[in-house]
Structure formats: C-alpha cells, structure tokens
Amino acid sequence: MISLSKRYAPQEINVYAYCANNPLNFIDPTGAILEPEKWDKKSREAFNKYEVKLKANPQKYAKELATLEQLRKSDVNYVVQLGGDSNFSAGQEGGLTPDEAKNTIFINLSNKGNEKYSLFSRFGHEFEHARQFDSGEFAFAWDKNGNFLGRANGDISEEVEAWKVQSKLSDAKDKQVTFATGDVSTSIINKFDSATSDNEKAKALSGLSNTYSKSYENIKTDPNLYGKKFQLNGIPPGTKITCSTKINSSEGRTYFGRTYNSK
Image (tube, rainbow, N blue to C red; front, side, top):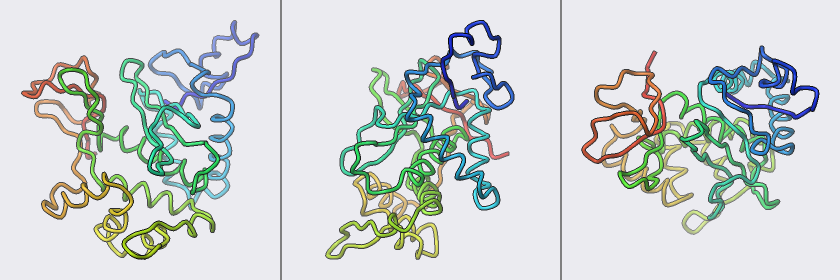
C-alpha cells in the first residue's frame, strides 16, 4: 500500500480520511494509520511529479505504472522519504529500509544536492526494488539475535532489473555520469545499455560497488544463483512472512517478505 496523506482538520470527521479522501486509489486493507511525518510534503510532491511523468506516456511506462498499482494494492505499507534513513555512503543514491514492526518499507532517496542521477531515474530504480520485494524476489532477514542481515535471496539480478528501469527514465545528463572502472572513466548507463545480455549487464555493474562485485563473482561461480527467489521449505508461495512467523530454521533467522509465487 502506497500511503499518501494530507492533514486537514475537517477530515477528522470524514470516514474516508484514512485514505486522503480517495478510497478508489488509496486503499488501506490493513487499517494502518497513516503517518504524514514519514511521507512529508517534499516526498509527496516529488512522487506526484514522478507519477505525472509516467502517465504522460502510459505506453512507454506501462510497466512502471503497473508497479505503482501493485504497491497501492499491497498489504505492505510503502512510504517515500527524500533523504530517508539509508546509508548513502560511497555514492549510493537510494535504498529500501524495512520496518517489520510497522509492516512498512521505506523507499529512501538521497536528497543532499550532490546526487549524480536525476530524481526521476532514481525513483524508477527504487520503486523497482520495492516491486521485487512485494513480489517475493527477495526478503529482509535478521539473525537469531535480532541483528539485521540485509536481503535474503537477493543478488545482482535485482540490480540489473532496477538499472533497466533507471536507464529508461534517464535524461541526457544521467548518461554523461562517469565512473572510474580500471584505467578509464565510462558512462555506466551507456555501458549498461550497450550490453546485449543480462549477464553482460551484470558485469557492467560489477565495478560500481563491493556488493555488486561479490554478487557478480558468485554467479560466475554458480550461474544458478542468478535470479534466485525468496522461498522457504514448507511455506506456500505468496505467503507474507513476518518476524513472528514460525519457521523451521536451523539458523534461527527471521524474515520480512513474501514467498515467491511464479503465477
């Protein structure tokens, strides 16, 4: 569920106040309380501009519009935060943060004024990751002591798909952004776009971060790891998993996500 809200005093007596007076588009199947402080004015305005851009060319951006529709209908809350609670070190310009206790995924976008890529392209990238989470392509995991482990069954395949969306939404300046790879500087988007297979696209991304590099090396060792989905023994496909879900795990891990359903 993408949570959009504005606070007006008269709305306090409106039975549709929970969905910003728009029950057709902004449904709340979980009955969750909207938290405007976590979907602030700048974030909401930036998202609205992103959606307007997509709707201006619905054929070109059919997939991206379908992603927004999927997240609106989800039983998980999705909240955009410009400058949200993510580690934006090493040039990272976006990321997802799970709050399992609140059934929420925060879609964080750096907003420090020195981002290399356009906000539109970064919106596309991170919303694709949110769709992947919602579809069960990866989950978030914690160890038995409650320490956050990151993505479960995540690999560079998710980054390949996210960069495809980012490239699709990129402007001319985005394609001029260069990174040092070896002895030369190259436009990662141009290099990514010129790759003719997903494996080559993964290779193009591998030099951007240690995480990408390790994931790419893993699939070189075992190609079956590429595109691995979040599945748990004995748990039906499409089941939402939370940290309170009883799972037979020898490692004592807990998860927040949804088991992958191929249908």
